[in-house]
Every structure is written in C-alpha cells, then in structure tokens.
Image (spheres, rainbow, N blue to C red):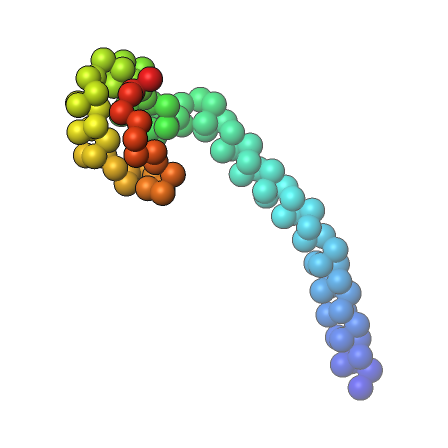
Length: 102
C-alpha cells in the first residue's frame, strides 16, 4: 500500500511538472519554426514560388484598358456581350441604353 501511494504521488508530480514545462517548449518550437520560415523567405525562398505580382498578366492591365478606350461603340458592345457574366458581374446592375465607352 505504501509503495503504490508513492508511485501515484510521483506520477502526479511528473505529470504536473510536464504540464507546467510543456508550454515553454511549445513556444520555443513555434518561435524556431517562425524564425526558420522568415530566414527561408528572406534568403531566397521566394524564387521558388510565383507570387501574385510576378505571375502572368501583371502589368498588362493599362495596355488592355487603352485597347478598350480605342474601341468603337460597335466593337465595345460586341466586347461587352462576349464577356458578359464574367468577374461576378451582376446583370441586373447593367444599364441597357448607354452605348458610350467613356
């Protein structure tokens, strides 16, 4: 009886100590991985992935806008009909009588 009581007390002490010390190790582990991730991104991790600014189509919007501005009214209406419903356009909010592209 005396032996099982001592084993139970030691097990409780070890479990309590582990629960007390565990957050310190977890914080160190999280900080370690954050530091490694920051160093990886800082020293060349970005060259292996395509960012949204480096992807295809970045910087092409002004040329596309100039192309739309240079369209005639007929070309612009054909363009609107061809691309209607893309980019989550709401068809109820479109005006029907306006044919200018200003």
